[in-house]
Image (tube, rainbow, N blue to C red):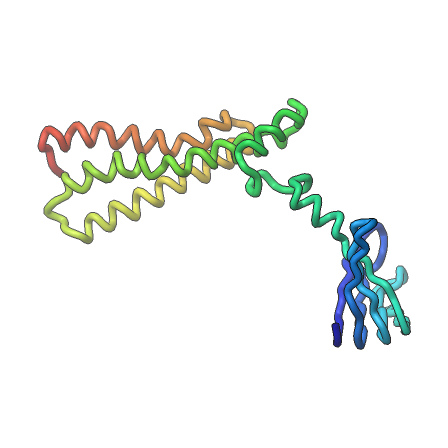
Length: 201
């Protein structure tokens, strides 16, 4: 590698570091499962504890920078992953380990039901869209377009509100995510009955 720039973020009371090197190489330590960089002919700059006006610069002929592969592997293995990044089975296993008193249980449960409810939304839109397409005849494409935009906006409005209340534990996690689907289906079924009896707007 050449013309290397490395920024090490604050970690464990260590200051922010700006490392530049003329050249270097990546080294893999298979025995200890480590990957690090060996840098040559460079500088390290960091702020002292006195404040931002105290910038310290160190010159080096050779230096080693350990890449945090352990933290990366934790994310890959799911130890630091958010429920949005997990599968339904992974979230279910996580819920078994989270204490009942932990407020995170609501968020994990909401995300699990969200992964199931959103795919079923297409059926809810079908139930309400089919009769609307039959009943709205005189308005043409413009009226149909307005109805479609209104339905989508209403769906995501109810979904967002449900997620907010579900994450706070104010309503049941399953209801928070299925409420939008149930609302569309509840409106669509009477409309389907009306369409089958040839009623129109």
